Length: 307
Image (cartoon, rainbow, N blue to C red; front, side, top):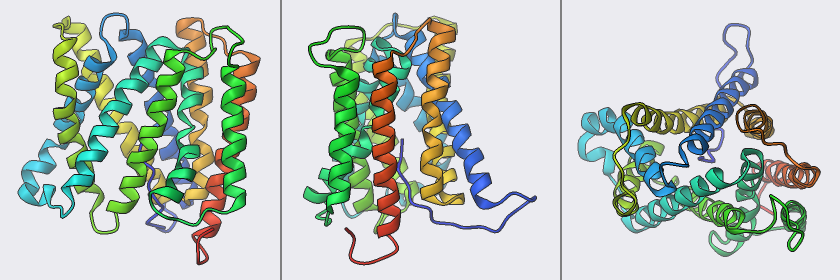
């Protein structure tokens, strides 16, 4: 999912404040995300993560095709194709890894680990974007990764012990953080539409090898579900961006964590998954840490220099 700043503050419409309308968009994003990850897990026994990623990218490209045809070359106008290639490659690998984790782990557990992308942004901001990172953000990131260890409990055994699916989600979160960092650099002179068109086009190309190696012709019903999964992913991203644009970013970020509740409920009802106490405790630490980092980012955006 894309991390976008709040760009617009429209006046209240229909009696709803911008933050209320933004919250509704964020709730729509959370519902779309839950439906998408449920389909990922449901189809996972028959369709590997690499193949699901191909269908996700193909559906997203199809949704954007009218925009590409209407704008022509302008949809791909860029002065830094290298960064766009890197972002798309990292994003495609991250998607494959995260789909694998959602297939193999309880939905709530995998979703909790996915929020570590905010923690990864702290060291990346310091070493890649050369931002000044203050002690509060560093401490919050360290505590947040402590919450990850609380969930994983290395050497403790159990369903959520350190293993390939959990490592895949942590790696995916790091790669997603890289793409967000790259986006922050590119949005200085590129429109969101250009970035999205490049991401979907290159993502579709980069997903082809994995799809070829794991290919199987889907049944008609499965084809519909795979395409629906891809469309839901695009809708989820669009709702998230809209929510961040309409509402205040600092107010919208906490609402995104409702995904933890939705995915836990879906996992329990549909797959008989029940989060452990360790998962809930670790997730609480991660959420608190990422909220603190988000709040600090919001505060520092009002002053200069950033800390």
